[in-house]
Amino acid sequence: MTAPDAAEGGRGAPAARIGLAGAAMPALTVAVSLLALGLLWSLAAAAWPSRAFPPPGAVWRTLLGEAASGDLAYHLGATLARVAAAYVIAMSIGTVIGVFLGSHRRADRFFNPWVVLFLNVPALVVIVLAYIWFGLNEAAAIGAVAVNKIPNVVVTMREGARALDPSYGEMASVYRLGAFDRIRHVLLPQLQPYFAAASRSGIALIWKIVLVVELLGRSSGVGFQIYLYFQLFDVAAILAYTLAFVAVMLAIELLLVQPLERHASRWRRRPA
Amino acid sequence: MRAAGAAAPLRVDIAAKTFRSAQGVSLTALRDLSFEVRRGEFACLLGPSGCGKTTTLRILLGLDRDFSGSFQLPEGGSGRIAAVFQEPTLLPWRTVEQNVRLALPKDRRAMDLDRLFGDLGLAGMRSLYPSELSLGLARRVALARAFANEPAVLFLDEPFVSLDEQTAERLRHLLLSVWSARPTTALMVTHNLHEALMLSDRIVVLSARPAHVEGVFDIRLPRQDRSPQVTSDLLRSFRLKFPTHA
Image (cartoon, rainbow over all chains, first blue to last red; front, side):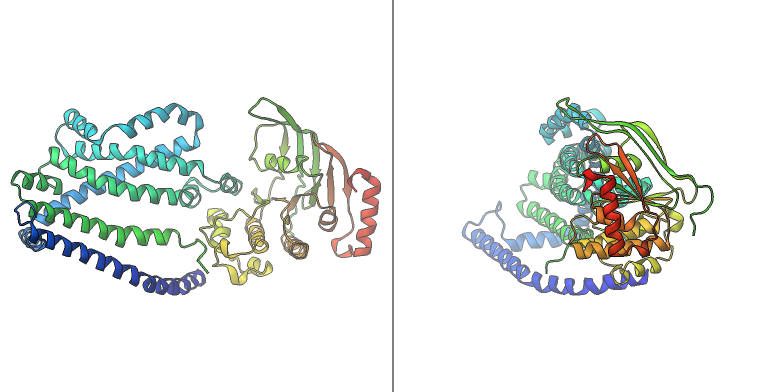
């Protein structure tokens, strides 16, 4: 199997080069745009000096101070772990339910009202109920976040299952593919675009809900810190934690999610 | 020649196959359809468009179990079946070679495919994705996938439809040479009489819907002797026997 690998590498290289050249211009635009926002912020902070509206420099100093004390890493880590756990739980349960509903029309008709109901339950209600029923613990916190996200995953993956091409399933059945091969090589690749869409909106939603969960019932995490500094009216610290967390989530998107997606769709016809 | 031993044929005996639409209208596609394909024989199922040829094939492939009657696949050999569908049905996210290997049983996944890819003119295309192939090439990959399985019976559903005549003719020759090198019982659905006369040992002629066997046309002449002159003679005698299928 050396020949295909070599050929794949050969084709990957020019694609990467085009990607770099094409990425330089937008990246420059993004940098200039962010710089302009920072400039606007410091101008506004200078025009209306107030403890409730600190300039970027003050936020940066607070950020460095929190990082040096180790608090930032500890609370960021706690929040990230919760985001990751809730994401994995929501995606796996939501995918299984979604694919099941998408391929069983009668079950879908029966359970659809449930899905609609859960889609419309406010996140706050689920969190409060989870804390009341299961106590102020980690399982309740992560479970509440997952339950908030599962209906969204179900709806997306249900669409994916409805769009499955039956001819691939028939091919798999004629050639007697095993259950693992069917899932890994026939089912999942067809669901991949839907999975990517659900993942993307999932992470964005989950990390926002995780902050609320931490604010209401945990004693660690970015949400807890923000609540703490809210009581102290320390806007610089609130902004420092927010910016640090947004930066981490963007890094995950750029360094993890996008490369994975490029890898998963490498077989699509390349633009000529 | 692997095709030795007890000559258990492919035996088809479908009493009826009925489709029911959502509005409750029922439509009988097949009625009292029975025929046999001897072991190691290449047979064609010939009939007008929409007469139920593909339906028959789907029943034999085990994709449609809602029918009355029975059928028996050839016994012995590998016990596997293989199919070449109307569309190539290659997984777009796997390369040509990965597509072929995935369809093989686990213990044969690592087998040497050089000969087969060479015979089908696919040697340089093993690492291409299906979206990079023409329809004719994709059909060759579908043939490679089927033959790599060394099936006990091979089903082909109009595998050369919607190709230009020149490409289709070249693929027919390829199919013949690959099949002669790896003989197996084969049943091909077609509505192209020329194709049937060129490829098969026997032609099972179906009537219009509800399909049943109108008759069987055996061709005992070896394929290499079927010159254009001989083929037109075959065509004439076929038309005498089945005047409605001209």
